Image (cartoon, rainbow, N blue to C red):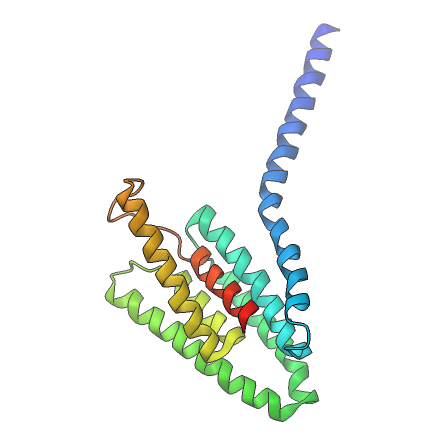
Length: 198
């Protein structure tokens, strides 16, 4: 009888530990709905439905990319592909409803993707992979959502914040000169500032 009771207690603690682990995995993503809810309030009257939808999507994808990069120092190809596919799906109705505006937006998005992906690819190649391939793809996709001006702003803010943080961490001897820090969280801060202030 005692053995059965002990087995029951052990089983109960395994479930509790399992629940705690699932909660730890879910908890970081709770910030997404909070940020998404704030956007329409702050952008009320400033943006049309399609622009607002694109901003909401980049908030979601940027947040998830930042969390993934913090946890694993990687942004997977499948995730970036999903991000690009969501942009295409969001843009499709606009082509039929407001073709002229859609074509203008497509041009801006193409320039944003080229500048974001292109400059980060150039940095990736000359820095001997000091920058991750996932960061290059993330910036190209961010360009689709935010266009030329928004992408340049995100790159400037994100890289400056990352460089300053890296410098502080080196001075505090928390990391070495050759250690890497995840870039996506800093890019996400740039995304948020761009989205909310644009």
